Image (tube, rainbow, N blue to C red; front, side):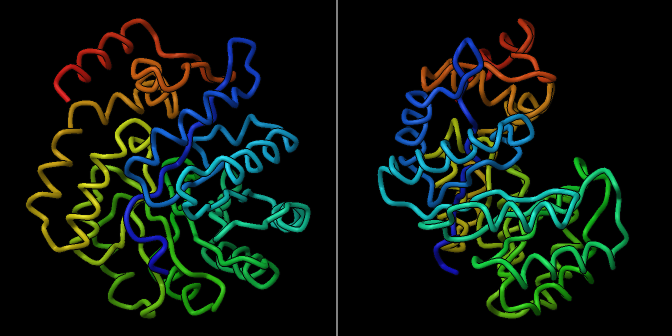
Length: 289
């Protein structure tokens, strides 16, 4: 799965002032991120998938397919806490030109480890595309344990995991027991170098929307085992990274993109655009990057 080495960018969904999808802004974003990323992730959490309609999701995916400046691989987000609904969405989605599905662990209903396992096995059995697991306990309120990940890794249609648990020991346990063709991907921007030092192949990143070239240095240096240079690039983002989550993702990164004149910063309720205080902090951080 070399196509998923390096940086995947979890694309934001630009909106105009009427909160309609801003396709010109999306085109600008695709061109901007193509400067450094290795693949696109469409309609993940950062893309505000919780508040885009099914019709909009289709339009966004079609647009990315048709406006992909470098013909980069595409990962599409299809996940949820209703297994049957996830399967129905996969069946009803035109997946042509898509390389893999990123599927978040079931949220809110907090299933057991066996429930998580059976959820993913059902999806992997029926999906025409390979599945990348997504473990993000901070949003789902449940962790996919290393043992469960390794059980799932034995399935031929489950090719990797985006790990956003922040637990490096758990990541090491996955690396120790995984099959050779199963990939570990960082889901925490600032832990990317650390995770790659223990075997991860890259990151699916929020900050790469704004800083694709920095992330190219982070991941490609690490892939070449130059962890010193990778760390130096990561350290450039230390101050701005917490601001991305201060008022929830993607509020912060959309403000970055506004300041960089890539697209505007509109978000859909229940999120709100960055407060004046956050705008000022982000603007100050950008001055030293």
